[in-house]
Length: 101
Image: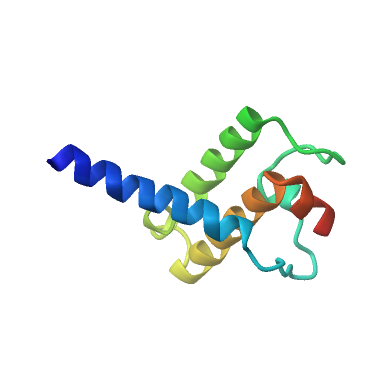
């Protein structure tokens, strides 16, 4: 019974997120936002390979997660940087969003 509940919750989160992603509003970017720079990837006109993107996102997320960097950096800056990391991952994982940027 516990497994069924966990699977139902996971499926709801996963498919809810997919539905929200496909119906997402256009993104707005700050003036000097560069997703390649945020994730420390070489600049290119195409999408990076998924495994490269995952590694870069994980590295940046671990670096800027508010629970990890709050000892050395103000929490507000950590949260702002983490939002940039999430936005950069969203942009670089979708060709349509990359063209929008």
